[in-house]
Image 1 (cartoon, rainbow, N blue to C red):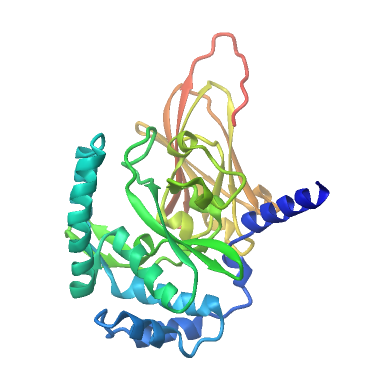
Image 2 (tube, rainbow, N blue to C red):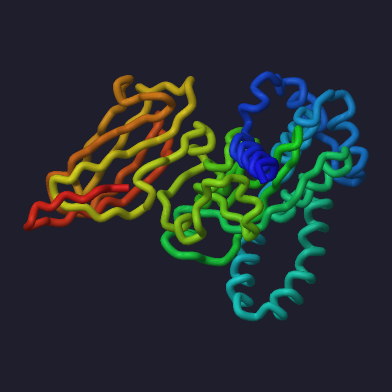
Length: 346
């Protein structure tokens, strides 16, 4: 019994600690250089591409890094087809047979366009990462699930809308998202903009679960995981949340109700080298706005705590910002409390 308990504890530690910092001793410049040198290589011969991306690299993580960087740099997100796919999924939400038939038809189109035009949706990104990794004996799987944006899976559960990857390196599972890392779609110019975000590469699972939720719980890769309902009700996070490697800790919900004169503590887990003087909270309600700048005194043992006492009733949008980049967003509704009771804020 003790032996089984020890194994369980070791497995828990194994799951929790998997993150990019495990490889801080690795310099990825060589792997990145190899990936960029293959810029003009097409997908006509995928096994050859996998070989060229990895042949001169020594470690598993460097080989996978080269594959990942190549995909992020050379594959373009197909926004229009992605939106069409989501519409079809909603249409067939309660018709599994109809969805299966449509899905089988569309999959061939996805992969043909990926191979011919190097343009695809999230499923194509995840498929290509998996295939290239598997060709060089790296264990890699596709994760299907939910992704939160400012419009989707916020407050209530929508349909599964995203695919990303799990990769096994040094006997630990990590998550990567080549789709979101590769860039973004500019709705004004209606074009895909390449803008690589390294934050999605092997990020900690507790950060991933602020924006991703798998259909299969085994891919949560943490023992301290949220329920799906908690996930959709959490604060809104952004690509920059990954870029700066910041994990929102409290409040746990996007929307919080309090009373006048209550204090709310906004807590964020940050990495050691982050510049604290570039952080701030911006609170706005109608035409009123207030900025709370972070200082060294707000930092302790890897956490930033910024406090604010709400003295007037109303609805407040609160944004945690680094430089000019949005990291996390909340809504605080302040009501008048005739009894002046105090409540605890999670």
